[in-house]
Length: 139
Image (cartoon, rainbow, N blue to C red; front, side, top):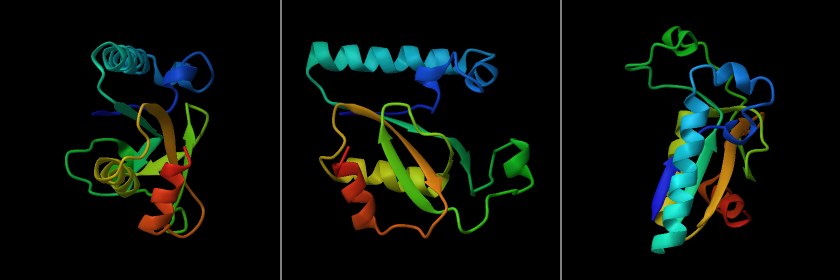
């Protein structure tokens, strides 16, 4: 099984604000990587999961030179609920801890095989591990 961490906007590179974010071709390169994984999975018979987080926020702050994290300018503590959606339809930012938990749940279970999906945080309390698993199972 291959798990790829990609980005929101990969399938919407021509819609604002993603052309700005793709100025150096990062989203295009990720789209090429996603396509290669999907083709390889089909030809070779392995499974894959492509996770598309929004802009990452939250610690740790080591080796990160983005100004928002350099100065630890994070969203408030109320932005911890988790949304997942197939494809590349969601908009929002993603806590690093949320991305880590979602990735760990995918590694530990049989959920979200052979799909691509987005994950973002929204206002609300952090869901339980069981709630995250149920959301992944519903994809």
